[in-house]
Length: 88
Ligand SMILES: [Zn+2]
Image (cartoon, rainbow, N blue to C red; front, side, top):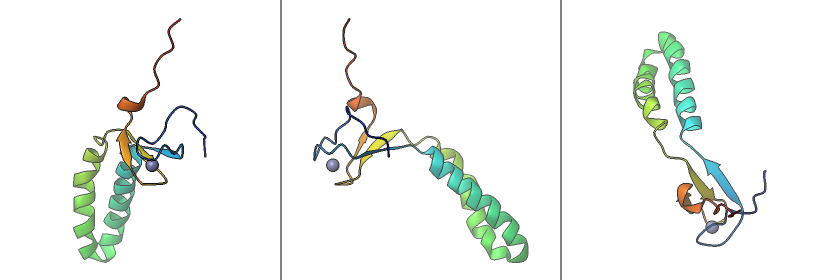
């Protein structure tokens, strides 16, 4: 786990912050879609899972990047918590 020194949870001031984006979720949907596609050849009701997975996965890329506090589960947007650039 990478430790960060500049991002704090706005609610509980914890530094245990997890970075999240929609990309892993999109890949997860894609993998489930592909697996159920092939498994559906043998057991075709699985295609009821395949179709929504393929339909939804492109939208998961649209989930904005955000941070999630591991202590209080509070989520906040990355943009608002960027550290200020030090003036030279
Ligand atoms: Zn927190």
